[in-house]
Length: 222
Image (tube, rainbow, N blue to C red):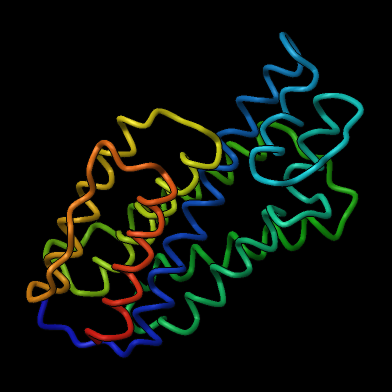
C-alpha cells in the first residue's frame, strides 16, 4: 500500500465505488419489484422507492421499468452513472484502463437510451448489470493491492450497507460488511484509534460512525 494519493483522488475513488454499487443494487431491486408488480403486488415498486425517499407513479410493470431507470427523480440511473463517470475521469490514472473504458461505455449507453424512444425491458437491465460486473472484475483483477483499490472497495461496501439500511435489508449481512469496512479502515489508518461497530448499535449510529471514519481517512490521512 505504498501508493500515495491526494485527498481529492481518494475521495473520487471512494465515491466512484459508491455510485457504481448504487446503480447495481438499485437495478437488482428494480428487477425484483418488476416481477412482484406482475405477479403479486402492483404497488411493490412504489413501496421500494418510498424507502429511498422517492414518490413514483406508474401504470404497469413495463412503465415501472422506464420510470425506475430514467424517471425524474434522484435515483435516475443515467444521472448516477454520470456521477460515477465524473469520479472516474478525475482518478483515471488510478483505474484499470479497461475498467475506465467500460465505465465510459456504460455511461454512453445510458445517455443514448435516456434521450431516445428506447423501451426498457429486463434484457436491457441484464445487459447493464453484466457491464457493471465486468467493471468490478476489471477493477479487482490486480494481484497486488494498491491504496486506490482499498478506497474503491470502501465505497462499494459503504454504499452496500447504506442501501441495506434504507431498504431495510438483513442487518446480519450488514454487520458482516461493516466488519470488513473496519478492517480496511485499519489498513488505511493503522495509527488511528477507531471504535469497531457493535451489534447493538442502531443503523443511524453505524452509518454516522462509518462516515466519520471515511472523512478522517480521506481528509487527515492523505
